[in-house]
Image 1 (cartoon, rainbow, N blue to C red):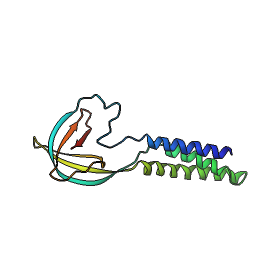
Image 2 (image 1 turned 90 degrees about the vertical axis):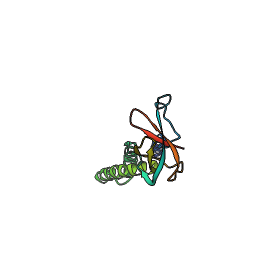
Image 3 (image 1 turned 90 degrees about the horizontal axis):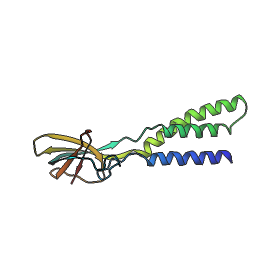
Image 4 (image 1 turned 180 degrees about the horizontal axis):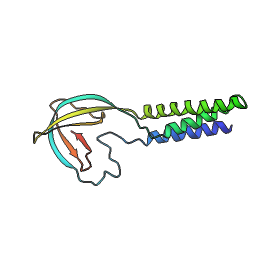
Amino acid sequence: MKTTKLISLLVFIALAAAGCASSMSPNVYSRDQAQKVQTVHKGEVIMVREVQIEGTKSGVGAIAGGIMGFALGSTIGSGSGRTVARAAGTVGGAAAGAAIEEGATRQKGLEITVQLDNGEVVSIVQGADEAFDEGDLVRVLRRPDGTARVIQ
């Protein structure tokens, strides 16, 4: 019973951490990005390519998986056999938890290459929640910290 509660708690923590992954959407701003100056450049899309944006690797998935693996290993055998099962469960759970975290937060993205009106060519990767085609007239929003996004 105790193990079931522990596993449930750890799964909840892992899912909550995955839900906290930052968005790569051009339509989502973090609290830190709100009310900050952005330079706006007009331009034309000259190329669009689908990409994968890797998921987060915060360590939360590995820690939660390791704890769950340890708890499951504790239910196997006794004495030195239980010690080996705990160690194997911890290592296996940590690897599985890290992979689950990265996979759950991975997302489809677009690499959008834009020729700006001033002649400069820039390429920006962002979440693929808006469609862009070659020839689209767009705006590129640039921040002093180097981040940018493309919007219609």
